[in-house]
Length: 324
Image (cartoon, rainbow, N blue to C red; front, side, top):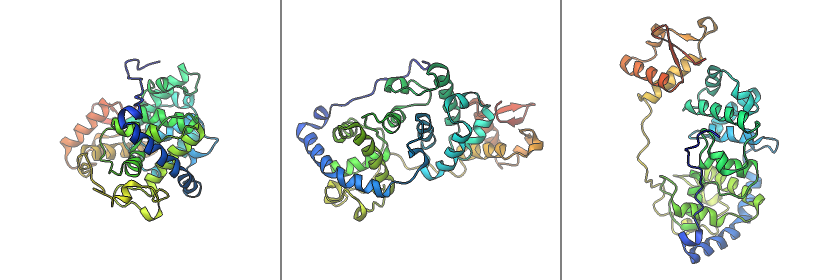
């Protein structure tokens, strides 16, 4: 397996040691009480997202999880559908031209994810017989796969009992079981221990729990305006009972503005390459590129950074194209 120096040991924080026995047992009792109304809500309100179809392969689940990093699910759906129709497994993606992969990534943002996904596909195709591993350490050893993605594949694709921890799940669990606002930042030992403590012991129920809590955080228990009156956990939520203390407070720095940043300029360049007419033969001429952004120094800097990242190639001195 490549990427051998990557950390592959998952932190299994002991809930009793981290939370204390009394707090752990209280959380477990509350979890057992809230499970039935949560699952009933999930049965009615779960969005019909295509990767939730029982026929979706583990590879399809991984593609969804990579695409949805820092991207709204609603934006991912058309890209995922087109992607899986074109490259239904790792072997198909492994052999695709990089230019086609980047073009198909479209406006999802952070296009390096597309290249990392292709790197992952090549390892899976060559070393795993075109099947994703069913082992946590083997999954996180793959290019571009971290703790969350590995856990999501094991839970959602393979039905394994493992806690999945993303921003939505952290927010719901912190509010409902600790009575505290989730402040963001890196996942802490308390949050991880709590997720393990309240996870149902039955594997099938644990997978439903992960998806239902995540969906609740996306649709109801939102960051700034939670719809508490519509929440299936309202009868036992400690955050609601406490009066929603510090609602919306964040530990992380304010979101960086997008307008005028290098990220915006890089996106404009990539979109111009994807939109090239056929008679351009995939090459964005320097004179055409220079009209994309008025600050030519910033434009040149962004083209150079895209080249360094392997997302474009500079040809004929100054012209640009997607990599072959």
